[in-house]
Image (tube, rainbow, N blue to C red; front, side, top):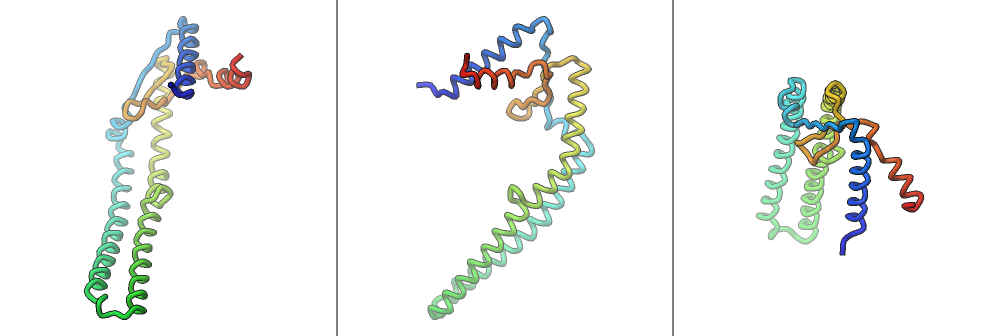
Length: 179
């Protein structure tokens, strides 16, 4: 049994194909870029990557130091725990848990999805990405390309001629119940 989503995807592709074929006299032209190559060869992108690497190294060094201290404290606890009474043992375990949480929080604050590294990466890379996208759009228009894909990722559309956008036609068709 096929999923309804797969059937919908096939229908959407068929609609897109029919739309493209019906406008074939416009001569559909497709291009692609490799964004990894662009980023590796663009000096300002390389500079941004170097800055990010330096930032990450400092934070990673601090995280490593914190982890080593935690490991040393844990090993010390392991050696001494037999001599502790229940109250002292519990207190020491709580200290270790608190220290572990501190290390985890530091890691999340620096390297988490919304951490400082992600913010710095966005701050440094967004203007570069915008510049690249503007250049792609300019080249696409100069070359009279209808679509530009990025072969470095999962075939992301970087530019599309608006005349090929059938989004609202599909929405309208869906809202009318496929009539």
